[in-house]
Image (cartoon, rainbow, N blue to C red):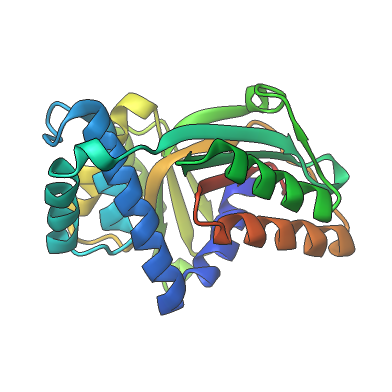
Length: 242
């Protein structure tokens, strides 16, 4: 699962700017709205909303902002017309890529996603062409300033006691993996503990195996990923680059 951790490191550096954080909040707001339209505004009975709230908190979205977004979405259900559309394909070197979007215009989004794949040496495929290479998991990432600060036994036991499936430690990043149905509970337990620097918590597609690229190929591939993530309709991008 180290491929996910490496991508997380790249993604985390990208998200340090205020502009990117603002865009992230906008995208999470859209996810909140769709979750509410799908299952109502009560997170106790709406698991999708519960998961999005966990993601919002891990991205340092203030609680009052989350509550305002929920209240606003609850009053605008008739005008929310976004739909989930997932695209699958291959980047340069055969790297498998899954792009999750929320869009109000399928044709526009499909054209923009296909353009980025074509521009950077990839190709968009049919639904299901790469998703079988991934497992859907809850992924919680915890950052430490120094690897010496990580008590591997303590954090592993805490995670497993909370219901996590696995823990991976890579340099100063601890990644906790959960089953989809356990994600909200495990994420809340870590947040409530108050002693962990959670930098990301979300449902992700975790690759079963990873692929290596040359430096030149990787640079080109990451330009495609950057372009996809900058697209307003794109919510998440997953791949199996090592």
